[in-house]
Image 1: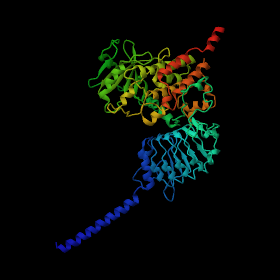
Image 2: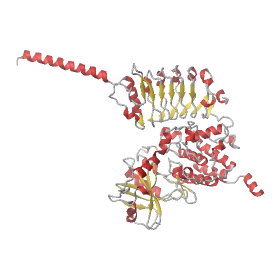
Image 3: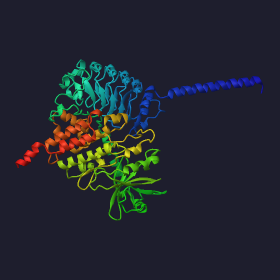
Image 4: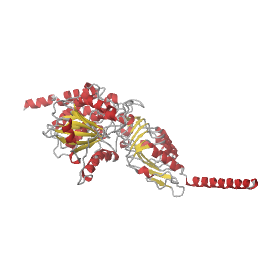
Amino acid sequence: MPSATMGISRERGQKVLLCVLLLYGFIARSTALSSDGEALLSFRSAITNSDGILLQWRPEDPDPCKWKGVTCDHDSKSVIYLSLSHHKLSGSIPPELGKLGRLRVLSLHDNNLYGNIPSELGNCTELVEILLQGNYLSELIPSELGNLSKLQKLDLSGNSLSGTIPSSLGKLNKLTTFNLSANFLVGPIPSDGVLGNFPERSFVGNRGLCGKQINVACDGGPTSSQTPPGIFSAFPGQNDRKNSGRLLISASATVGALLLVALMCFWGCFLYKKIGKNENKGFAINITGGGSVVMFHGDLPYTSKDIIRKLETLNEEHIIGCGGFGTVYKLAMDDGNIFALKKIVKMNEGFDRFFERELEILGSIKHRYLVNLRGYCNSPTAKLLIYDFLPGGSLDGALHERSEQLDWETRLSIILGAAKGLAYLHHDCSPRIIHRDIKSSNILLDANFEARVSDFGLAKLLEDEESHITTVVAGTFGYLAPEYMQSGRATEKTDVFSFGVLVLEVLSGKRPYDAVFIEKGLNIVGWLNTLVTENRQREIVDSQCEGMQTESLDALLSIAIQCISSSPEDRPTMHRVVQLLESDVMTPCPSDLYDSNSD
């Protein structure tokens, strides 16, 4: 072919290729996701967990207008509504949401969101509603929200927000709904502008606030965090104690979503036992690959072969419970002895390296108020723990699932037993053990309703051996201390907080996330705070509880209030809790002795 012809062909080919590239670029630009869609994808990336609703958000769409929870303007395709309440969203709110310039409603309430409220939301000047209540949002309220001149509704209640209320919010002249209740806000409530028009209920549950709206004088200055006068007036002598404790304003007012979280295990267990069953039941536990049984105490006449033979007969009919660490089975031996078998779920790659080492430590612990770990089975296919069986079941079941109610003395005895078990773990074990999941379902009862703390030390199995950082945050919503939810660092004081919540649960007969609280945007701690503020704290006691003594109740409430202080350093140690329980609660008061003598 002549060189001239080849040159013409090459030139034509280059032109065709250029046209194709230009056409491809035009198509790509026309189908690229809009800037609002990109902002929402940043939000999706920041969410670590949900009920699956965000999986329907497709990056290949030209705009987000058909995504679940998203509403767009018909003409401009700009996002105007982001409504994702009650979808179990866990994660932070990214600053990219501030790029939604036409956004009118931001509704993310009743989820598990944490971190700060991004100041970039102040750029969304079209916002009419911001509804973020019932999450775990922390840090300061950004003053930039005062730029939202069109804002009519602002609800940040039931979070962990701290610091003072920005005075810039007083400029929001169109505000008709305003709620900052149940946080950790301190200092004077701004009275200039619109904030002076809102009633006490907009601010209730913030221990350190003062101002005319709540009838508390601001004598301590703008950053005062003193306890409002009379908050402990029902507890004689408590006002004179420097460390009587601060009442935690519910950091976890977890409306709806947390109720589902708390019920998830029980629902899953029900499905497994009922729906998952079929006529050809297979073994629930299969011990293969050289499994062996290690028993810690030499008072059981069983060989590894005896136990493994029994283990392999277990199926779903033997399930007696399930929880965050695994499923629990009832294991009955031929001689009539009964044990509880916990099948552990493997949680990380380092599990096998220190499984046996950690269990050797736990197996060496014996205490009257701890559930006895008898032994374990470690095989490539199963990790099994063998515990003493407690015929009284769990405290959760005794409080919430049985028709026969616990009387006052039994409840006090259970509280004291749980305190002694936890104090032993904190102060007398070597190495010390932080439980991390104190709750009513982890307090088991013997035939005489004496308490035993269970599942202690198991959270250690979720840790990375070298970094000592918890890879999965242990604990149950409603019982968790606010600093643990924010940092993931467990200490003895986070256990003390959970114990304080447990005391309130035993007193009231209500779970921390009971529907009574949810309807009011609170949990059990927030409810107590409300009762204390109104001098009605004795009303927390279960109406079905017989034999209640007001002197013991006042002393017990004082201890619980110290345990659930928002400040960890103000919480007592468990040794101190036991001392207070024995001296102030369990010991008869002089008035009781006088009454008995007069009879």
